[in-house]
Length: 115
Image (cartoon, rainbow, N blue to C red; front, side, top):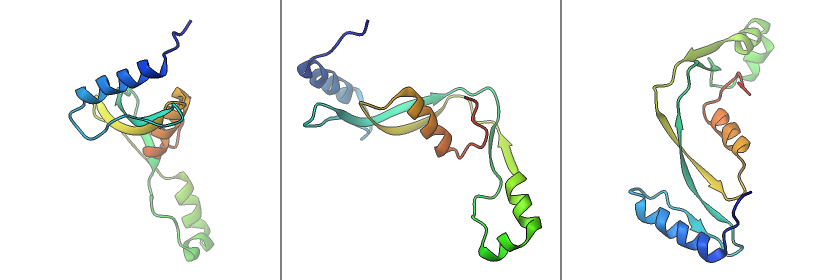
């Protein structure tokens, strides 16, 4: 069972958190009782990340050429992220863990979602 924190407890925890941050990535308490801020996500991936090889969207002329269209779909680049890669994400208190994972996948433009 999760303990439910009072508004005063949440405000105190946010103040404690912000006092320990050595950057400008603070948490803030909103009037409606929710809070927003940045979280630091440390990635320890053991498999390579695959991203589309061509980040640039094809032009209209490119899409008319079938060979370029098929290459754009199939070409991917795979690489390993350095161990302990850190990414900052802006979240609200109602953000779910699955939404954090989806945001990271989008941030890296990952093609193959490991689920």
